[in-house]
Image (cartoon, each protein chain N blue to C red):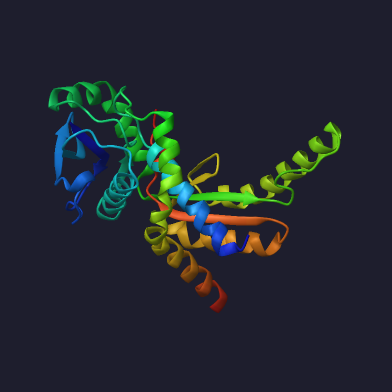
Length: 197
Length: 68
């Protein structure tokens, strides 16, 4: 089976790590796109395999102009299968690369002030939910300004804005002590691969 | 729940969620079953050490912010 880690653009060199189950990485060009893959038996979903996949994608991000991480657990039988799957998606993938070029992803989880509203009535529950929505909207606006795109709980941030983004999150946490804001990243742009479609 | 613990758990979930559920889908075949994914979620505590790097970066960023 062929395990795909991602579609890359301007990859300077393969990261010095092995792929899933210790398989060596290799570069594969299909329809003008470059993929990074490894060969081996169908990868089982284990903690090691998920981590290995993530490490390769992380390594690709720091060595390329753009990377579209591939979803884990979708291997190809052979080179022909791979080429047949990529061909109709080539234009979409090129647009996806353009969309994420120069960007990193930050994840954001916001907890509180009433994460699980203990409501005695439907009205109270709805009011608590509304308060949460308002709190989240206040958080979202300044962060969206620093981002190229955002999806539910994820922001696509130009690398040049990464520090400003972290500072903005920190500032929001100070301004909203009633909320617990947890920011993770910078991640490879896992959540924005389909945006070029 | 203390803040560092929450940060750990959220980072862990975010990593697993990204690798398994996000990312561009190149083929139509998927080999994961829902049961498999549940097992991964339960078993991934080992990843905590690997995400520590990300958290250090975050901590450094906040520390730098404090100096400005």
